[in-house]
Length: 121
Image 1 (cartoon, helix red, strand yellow):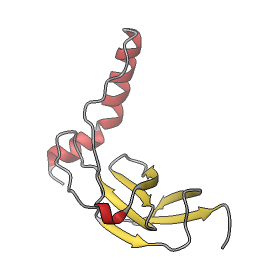
Image 2 (spheres, helix red, strand yellow; image 1 turned 180 degrees about the vertical axis):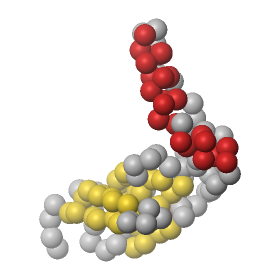
Image 3 (cartoon, rainbow, N blue to C red; image 1 turned 30 degrees about the vertical axis):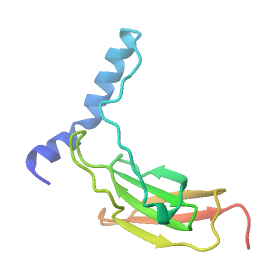
């Protein structure tokens, strides 16, 4: 990451809180700065479940075709995002009634992903 990207990420929490409090004082709704539209390829099926990884940059979702995908939402609101997930993995036997649990790796460069399902097949 560049120095300006690091600065943007490091100050994101304070900028968000300042914006939130300012809008609350004015009794105005909080309007998004940017919107991300992720359109999976038709062969990947529809999105069943999704979870934002803490920090807000990465999104994990599952599809109706048993794919679990990792999407990069970008560092800044103006960052262009790719039209494909960063990673995909087929996980058989999952349905829409599961939960995604995540935890960063000890070195901070990855995540552990745990899929929990309410029924066993």
